[in-house]
Length: 68
Image 1: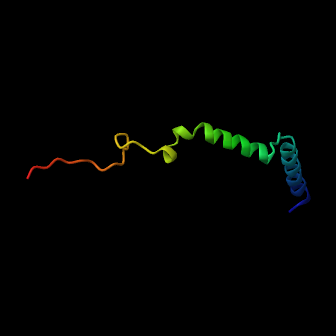
Image 2: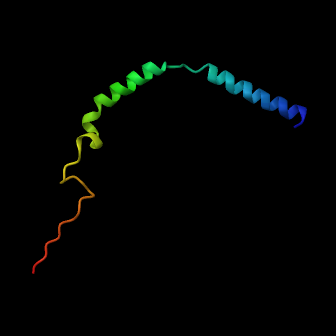
């Protein structure tokens, strides 16, 4: 690597670090509490928790009528 290309690379690194240092941070405990609250508020709309009615289930086996 030449001297000018390594200086350019270091300038990019410094610029990225300055950008990351300026971001607002949220504590993990606060983020976890917010996520838990969101999940509890939206649990009634989650099909994995509440189930899907058989009439609204698009993957249910089709019923065929056959005469013998």
